[in-house]
Amino acid sequence: MKKIFFYLLAVMMLANSCSEKEYSAGDLTPPTNLQIITEIVGQDGTHPNGDGSGDVKITLKADNALSYKVDYDANNAVDLVYLPTGSVTKKYTTLGTNTYRLTAVAYGKGGTSTTVTKEITIRSYFTPDATLVTNLSGGTSKTWIVDKTVGGHMGVGPWNVNSIRPEWWAAAVNEKVACCPCFYTTTYRFIKDAGTGTYSLQVTNPDGAFTKTGSLASIPGIPSSGAEGCYPYGGGTSSFTFVPSSSGAPSTPSVPANSPSTQTSILLGGTNTYIAYGSCQKEFEILAITPTYLYLRAQGTETGNAWYFKLIPQ
Image (tube, rainbow, N blue to C red; front, side, top):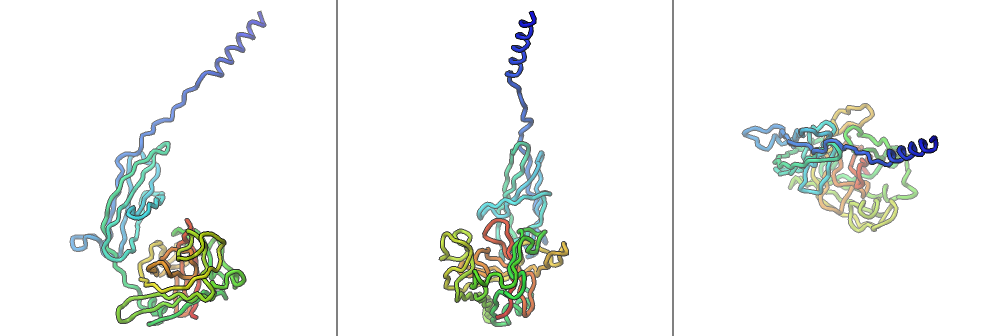
Protein backbone atom coordinates (compact mmCIF):
# COMPACT_ATOMS: atom_id res chain seq x y z
CA MET A 1 0.00 0.00 0.00
CA LYS A 2 2.82 2.39 0.84
CA LYS A 3 4.34 1.84 -2.60
CA ILE A 4 1.00 2.58 -4.26
CA PHE A 5 0.53 5.73 -2.11
CA PHE A 6 3.95 7.16 -2.94
CA TYR A 7 3.47 6.27 -6.61
CA LEU A 8 0.17 8.17 -6.74
CA LEU A 9 1.71 11.10 -4.85
CA ALA A 10 4.58 11.32 -7.31
CA VAL A 11 2.20 11.25 -10.28
CA MET A 12 0.11 14.08 -8.76
CA MET A 13 3.21 16.20 -8.11
CA LEU A 14 4.46 15.64 -11.66
CA ALA A 15 1.09 16.54 -13.14
CA ASN A 16 0.96 19.70 -11.05
CA SER A 17 4.47 20.75 -12.07
CA CYS A 18 3.66 20.32 -15.75
CA SER A 19 0.41 22.26 -15.71
CA GLU A 20 0.49 25.60 -17.50
CA LYS A 21 0.35 28.81 -15.54
CA GLU A 22 -1.44 31.80 -16.95
CA TYR A 23 0.14 35.21 -16.62
CA SER A 24 -1.45 38.57 -17.28
CA ALA A 25 0.48 41.37 -18.93
CA GLY A 26 -1.92 43.87 -17.47
CA ASP A 27 -3.47 46.76 -19.31
CA LEU A 28 -1.40 47.56 -22.42
CA THR A 29 -3.60 50.37 -23.66
CA PRO A 30 -1.33 53.10 -25.12
CA PRO A 31 -1.49 56.68 -23.81
CA THR A 32 -4.43 58.71 -25.07
CA ASN A 33 -5.25 62.40 -25.59
CA LEU A 34 -1.62 63.33 -26.30
CA GLN A 35 -1.25 67.08 -26.76
CA ILE A 36 1.61 69.37 -27.74
CA ILE A 37 1.00 72.69 -25.98
CA THR A 38 3.19 75.52 -27.25
CA GLU A 39 3.68 79.10 -26.11
CA ILE A 40 5.76 81.21 -28.48
CA VAL A 41 7.49 83.79 -26.31
CA GLY A 42 6.40 87.35 -27.14
CA GLN A 43 3.53 86.26 -29.39
CA ASP A 44 0.69 88.76 -29.66
CA GLY A 45 -1.49 90.38 -32.30
CA THR A 46 1.38 92.50 -33.57
CA HIS A 47 3.97 89.71 -33.37
CA PRO A 48 2.19 86.48 -34.37
CA ASN A 49 5.47 84.56 -34.60
CA GLY A 50 7.01 85.81 -31.37
CA ASP A 51 9.35 88.56 -30.25
CA GLY A 52 12.34 87.39 -32.30
CA SER A 53 14.03 85.52 -29.44
CA GLY A 54 13.17 82.18 -31.06
CA ASP A 55 12.04 80.83 -27.67
CA VAL A 56 9.10 78.43 -27.44
CA LYS A 57 7.72 76.85 -24.26
CA ILE A 58 6.70 73.28 -25.04
CA THR A 59 4.57 71.06 -22.79
CA LEU A 60 3.49 67.49 -23.55
CA LYS A 61 0.41 66.03 -21.86
CA ALA A 62 -1.38 62.67 -22.20
CA ASP A 63 -3.50 60.28 -20.20
CA ASN A 64 -1.71 57.17 -18.89
CA ALA A 65 1.73 58.35 -20.05
CA LEU A 66 4.86 57.27 -18.20
CA SER A 67 7.41 59.29 -20.21
CA TYR A 68 7.75 61.58 -23.21
CA LYS A 69 10.14 62.29 -26.09
CA VAL A 70 10.06 65.14 -28.58
CA ASP A 71 11.62 65.92 -31.93
CA TYR A 72 11.93 69.67 -32.38
CA ASP A 73 11.91 69.68 -36.17
CA ALA A 74 10.79 66.52 -37.94
CA ASN A 75 11.29 68.32 -41.26
CA ASN A 76 14.91 67.21 -40.81
CA ALA A 77 16.22 63.81 -39.63
CA VAL A 78 14.23 62.55 -36.66
CA ASP A 79 16.06 63.10 -33.38
CA LEU A 80 13.87 62.28 -30.39
CA VAL A 81 14.94 63.88 -27.10
CA TYR A 82 13.82 62.56 -23.71
CA LEU A 83 11.82 65.06 -21.64
CA PRO A 84 11.90 63.99 -17.97
CA THR A 85 9.18 66.46 -16.93
CA GLY A 86 7.33 66.74 -20.23
CA SER A 87 8.17 70.46 -20.43
CA VAL A 88 11.01 72.45 -21.95
CA THR A 89 11.84 75.88 -23.38
CA LYS A 90 13.41 75.44 -26.82
CA LYS A 91 15.37 78.17 -28.61
CA TYR A 92 15.18 78.05 -32.42
CA THR A 93 18.21 79.78 -33.90
CA THR A 94 17.67 79.76 -37.67
CA LEU A 95 17.33 83.44 -38.49
CA GLY A 96 14.16 84.73 -40.08
CA THR A 97 10.62 83.35 -39.93
CA ASN A 98 10.54 79.57 -40.23
CA THR A 99 8.02 76.76 -39.78
CA TYR A 100 8.98 73.69 -37.75
CA ARG A 101 7.14 70.39 -37.29
CA LEU A 102 7.20 69.09 -33.73
CA THR A 103 6.78 65.35 -33.13
CA ALA A 104 5.87 64.13 -29.65
CA VAL A 105 5.83 60.53 -28.42
CA ALA A 106 4.15 59.46 -25.17
CA TYR A 107 5.12 56.05 -23.77
CA GLY A 108 2.86 53.87 -21.63
CA LYS A 109 2.97 50.45 -19.96
CA GLY A 110 4.68 47.60 -21.75
CA GLY A 111 6.37 49.90 -24.26
CA THR A 112 3.14 51.13 -25.83
CA SER A 113 3.29 54.57 -27.39
CA THR A 114 1.27 57.30 -29.07
CA THR A 115 2.60 59.91 -31.49
CA VAL A 116 1.30 63.32 -32.60
CA THR A 117 2.76 66.20 -34.62
CA LYS A 118 2.23 69.95 -34.64
CA GLU A 119 3.58 72.76 -36.81
CA ILE A 120 4.71 76.09 -35.35
CA THR A 121 6.01 79.21 -37.09
CA ILE A 122 8.66 81.20 -35.24
CA ARG A 123 10.62 84.36 -35.90
CA SER A 124 14.25 84.50 -34.81
CA TYR A 125 16.15 87.77 -34.95
CA PHE A 126 19.61 88.30 -33.54
CA THR A 127 22.18 91.10 -33.34
CA PRO A 128 25.51 90.04 -31.82
CA ASP A 129 27.26 92.17 -29.22
CA ALA A 130 29.51 94.70 -30.98
CA THR A 131 32.45 94.10 -28.65
CA LEU A 132 32.25 90.35 -29.23
CA VAL A 133 32.37 90.90 -33.00
CA THR A 134 35.37 93.23 -32.69
CA ASN A 135 37.22 90.83 -30.40
CA LEU A 136 36.73 87.98 -32.88
CA SER A 137 37.37 89.80 -36.15
CA GLY A 138 39.58 92.68 -35.07
CA GLY A 139 37.13 94.97 -36.85
CA THR A 140 38.19 93.75 -40.30
CA SER A 141 40.07 90.45 -39.95
CA LYS A 142 41.85 88.48 -37.25
CA THR A 143 43.63 85.12 -37.27
CA TRP A 144 43.46 82.60 -34.42
CA ILE A 145 45.23 79.32 -33.55
CA VAL A 146 44.71 76.63 -30.91
CA ASP A 147 46.65 77.54 -27.75
CA LYS A 148 48.85 74.50 -27.07
CA THR A 149 50.56 76.26 -24.13
CA VAL A 150 47.63 75.85 -21.73
CA GLY A 151 45.94 72.80 -20.28
CA GLY A 152 42.42 72.16 -21.47
CA HIS A 153 43.01 73.68 -24.92
CA MET A 154 40.95 70.70 -26.06
CA GLY A 155 38.51 68.74 -23.95
CA VAL A 156 35.33 66.72 -23.99
CA GLY A 157 32.27 66.22 -21.82
CA PRO A 158 28.60 65.34 -22.20
CA TRP A 159 26.39 67.39 -24.50
CA ASN A 160 23.82 68.68 -22.06
CA VAL A 161 22.96 71.96 -20.41
CA ASN A 162 23.94 70.71 -16.94
CA SER A 163 27.60 70.20 -17.87
CA ILE A 164 29.32 73.15 -19.56
CA ARG A 165 32.86 71.90 -18.93
CA PRO A 166 35.23 69.18 -20.22
CA GLU A 167 34.49 66.82 -17.34
CA TRP A 168 35.55 63.63 -19.16
CA TRP A 169 38.96 64.67 -20.49
CA ALA A 170 41.10 67.80 -20.95
CA ALA A 171 44.32 67.96 -22.98
CA ALA A 172 47.61 68.64 -21.25
CA VAL A 173 50.01 71.30 -22.51
CA ASN A 174 51.39 70.29 -25.94
CA GLU A 175 49.55 66.96 -25.75
CA LYS A 176 48.91 66.62 -29.49
CA VAL A 177 52.31 67.87 -30.72
CA ALA A 178 53.76 64.42 -31.40
CA CYS A 179 50.75 62.76 -32.99
CA CYS A 180 48.87 65.63 -34.59
CA PRO A 181 50.94 68.78 -35.23
CA CYS A 182 48.33 70.07 -37.68
CA PHE A 183 46.06 70.73 -34.70
CA TYR A 184 48.40 73.57 -33.71
CA THR A 185 49.52 74.87 -37.11
CA THR A 186 46.10 75.33 -38.74
CA THR A 187 44.93 78.96 -38.71
CA TYR A 188 41.43 80.43 -38.59
CA ARG A 189 40.97 83.90 -40.04
CA PHE A 190 37.66 85.60 -39.19
CA ILE A 191 36.77 88.35 -41.64
CA LYS A 192 34.18 91.10 -41.35
CA ASP A 193 33.07 92.86 -44.53
CA ALA A 194 32.04 96.31 -43.33
CA GLY A 195 30.47 97.14 -46.69
CA THR A 196 28.03 94.25 -46.76
CA GLY A 197 27.84 93.46 -43.05
CA THR A 198 28.68 89.82 -43.75
CA TYR A 199 31.27 87.51 -42.22
CA SER A 200 33.55 84.76 -43.53
CA LEU A 201 36.05 82.25 -42.16
CA GLN A 202 39.26 81.30 -43.95
CA VAL A 203 40.89 78.06 -42.80
CA THR A 204 44.52 77.40 -43.77
CA ASN A 205 45.97 73.91 -43.24
CA PRO A 206 49.74 73.76 -43.88
CA ASP A 207 49.96 70.30 -42.28
CA GLY A 208 46.48 68.94 -42.94
CA ALA A 209 43.29 68.86 -40.88
CA PHE A 210 42.92 67.34 -37.43
CA THR A 211 39.85 65.12 -37.57
CA LYS A 212 38.28 61.72 -37.26
CA THR A 213 37.45 59.83 -40.43
CA GLY A 214 34.45 58.48 -42.30
CA SER A 215 31.01 59.68 -41.26
CA LEU A 216 32.52 61.44 -38.22
CA ALA A 217 34.38 63.94 -40.42
CA SER A 218 32.44 67.15 -41.04
CA ILE A 219 34.70 68.27 -43.91
CA PRO A 220 34.99 66.68 -47.38
CA GLY A 221 37.81 64.55 -48.75
CA ILE A 222 38.73 62.78 -45.52
CA PRO A 223 39.36 58.98 -45.76
CA SER A 224 36.48 56.63 -44.99
CA SER A 225 38.43 54.90 -42.23
CA GLY A 226 41.43 55.42 -40.00
CA ALA A 227 42.38 56.75 -36.58
CA GLU A 228 41.97 60.33 -35.40
CA GLY A 229 44.86 62.38 -36.77
CA CYS A 230 46.12 64.79 -39.41
CA TYR A 231 44.83 64.21 -42.94
CA PRO A 232 45.65 66.13 -46.13
CA TYR A 233 43.24 69.00 -46.56
CA GLY A 234 43.43 72.08 -48.73
CA GLY A 235 41.57 74.38 -46.38
CA GLY A 236 38.75 76.60 -47.49
CA THR A 237 36.63 79.70 -47.01
CA SER A 238 32.97 79.92 -46.07
CA SER A 239 30.48 82.41 -44.78
CA PHE A 240 29.36 82.37 -41.19
CA THR A 241 26.71 84.09 -39.12
CA PHE A 242 26.25 84.90 -35.48
CA VAL A 243 23.22 83.16 -33.97
CA PRO A 244 21.83 82.74 -30.46
CA SER A 245 23.34 79.58 -28.98
CA SER A 246 21.06 76.58 -29.21
CA SER A 247 22.60 74.74 -26.23
CA GLY A 248 20.56 76.61 -23.62
CA ALA A 249 23.66 77.27 -21.51
CA PRO A 250 23.04 80.21 -19.14
CA SER A 251 25.20 83.32 -19.11
CA THR A 252 25.77 82.75 -15.39
CA PRO A 253 26.60 79.11 -14.54
CA SER A 254 24.00 77.19 -12.54
CA VAL A 255 26.81 74.88 -11.38
CA PRO A 256 30.01 76.52 -10.02
CA ALA A 257 32.29 74.26 -12.06
CA ASN A 258 30.56 75.14 -15.33
CA SER A 259 31.70 77.81 -17.74
CA PRO A 260 29.58 80.89 -18.39
CA SER A 261 28.39 81.50 -21.93
CA THR A 262 28.03 84.55 -24.13
CA GLN A 263 24.90 82.78 -25.49
CA THR A 264 26.22 83.59 -28.96
CA SER A 265 27.40 81.05 -31.52
CA ILE A 266 29.35 81.06 -34.76
CA LEU A 267 27.32 79.12 -37.36
CA LEU A 268 29.47 78.06 -40.31
CA GLY A 269 28.01 77.93 -43.80
CA GLY A 270 28.84 75.21 -46.31
CA THR A 271 30.96 72.14 -45.60
CA ASN A 272 34.57 73.10 -46.26
CA THR A 273 35.44 74.95 -43.04
CA TYR A 274 35.68 74.01 -39.39
CA ILE A 275 37.27 75.30 -36.21
CA ALA A 276 39.97 73.32 -34.38
CA TYR A 277 38.56 69.82 -34.94
CA GLY A 278 37.06 68.46 -38.14
CA SER A 279 34.66 66.18 -36.28
CA CYS A 280 32.29 68.79 -34.88
CA GLN A 281 28.98 70.09 -36.10
CA LYS A 282 28.84 73.58 -37.59
CA GLU A 283 27.66 75.60 -34.58
CA PHE A 284 30.45 76.79 -32.26
CA GLU A 285 29.21 78.39 -29.06
CA ILE A 286 31.39 81.24 -27.75
CA LEU A 287 31.71 80.55 -24.04
CA ALA A 288 34.16 83.41 -23.49
CA ILE A 289 36.05 85.90 -25.62
CA THR A 290 38.49 88.77 -25.08
CA PRO A 291 40.93 90.39 -27.53
CA THR A 292 43.46 87.66 -26.63
CA TYR A 293 41.36 84.60 -25.75
CA LEU A 294 38.60 82.57 -27.40
CA TYR A 295 36.86 79.63 -25.68
CA LEU A 296 34.50 77.54 -27.83
CA ARG A 297 32.11 74.62 -27.32
CA ALA A 298 30.70 72.50 -30.14
CA GLN A 299 28.66 69.33 -30.45
CA GLY A 300 30.61 66.40 -31.86
CA THR A 301 29.58 64.45 -34.91
CA GLU A 302 29.42 61.41 -32.63
CA THR A 303 26.39 61.16 -30.35
CA GLY A 304 26.40 62.89 -26.99
CA ASN A 305 29.79 64.62 -26.93
CA ALA A 306 30.58 68.29 -26.35
CA TRP A 307 34.07 69.42 -27.44
CA TYR A 308 35.92 72.42 -26.01
CA PHE A 309 38.70 74.50 -27.58
CA LYS A 310 40.87 77.41 -26.42
CA LEU A 311 42.37 79.68 -29.08
CA ILE A 312 44.65 82.71 -29.10
CA PRO A 313 45.51 85.28 -31.81
CA GLN A 314 48.31 84.19 -34.10
